[in-house]
Image (cartoon, rainbow, N blue to C red; front, side, top):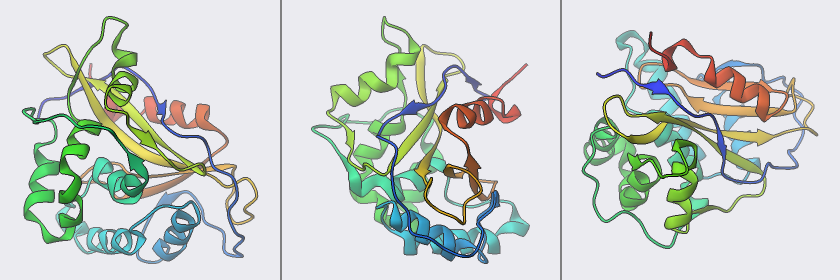
Length: 230
């Protein structure tokens, strides 16, 4: 698989949330597992996100596949599962002819565990697939794509965070990583103001990471060794 290099940091695509109910059990930074997934799912539901039961199944399947080192879900599929019902749009790209999403689409089209994503496959490829670099610069590629298709994430309690990568050998960018940031400043079981939920990659676990604010999150994401080459 070609390595990619990071060329832009997080794009906030919704207003940060307010308000989460209280829980006496502390939810710390680390992998989402069968042991803590019920707590994480409750946090996601409180933020107005969808398909948390399927999310729990994905987590449990990943736990069971740990010895094989592979899971059929990745970061983009996870965000689309949880936030897709709150994403509205006027149009999508008519066809997808790239290769960045080949593993995502193979799972969506052929694995029953991810079949619920197939209904909006055109939106999925429009959100995350390769897109041209505008004259204003690569950092405007994703915002331009959303504006072009009238895409909105209609949730006032959390945000979709996307990391934009430049394609290795062409003047295009794509969403190389994405996750969901939840505001839990009034929640006493979270050791920070915000929580980021993500699936780092096909071969890595689901993760929950408390952060002080979006700037700390951007720093964490942009400094990951997996996102840089040479």
